[in-house]
Amino acid sequence: MKPKEMAVVLAMVVDGLGLLVKTLWGMQERRFSATFDAVSSAAISITTAFVVCLLSIHRHARPEIGLAFI
Image 1 (tube, helix red, strand yellow):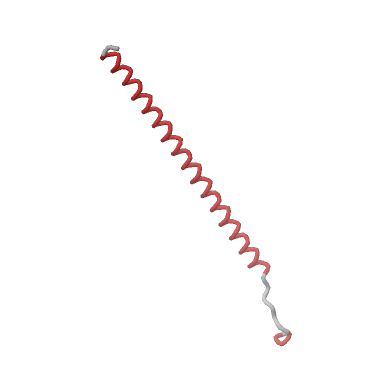
Image 2: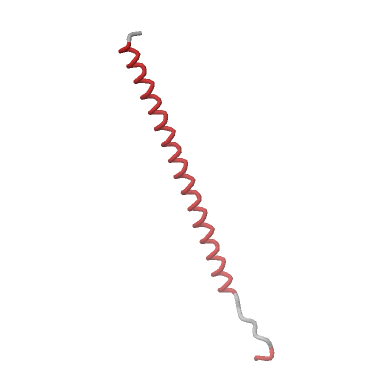
């Protein structure tokens, strides 16, 4: 192989490795984004369920009045 051909092949290999790294980086960012969305959705669901539970308990709680106070 001539030096010019070797340079072209080397440039193609480096370009291919750059594309591979860019693709892997993009997949990792997508995975992180999906994980973050899932965790925040779960946190919002848990918080909402907790608040609804507390409001339900508060609504159904009735003060007990003994016979002595009637």
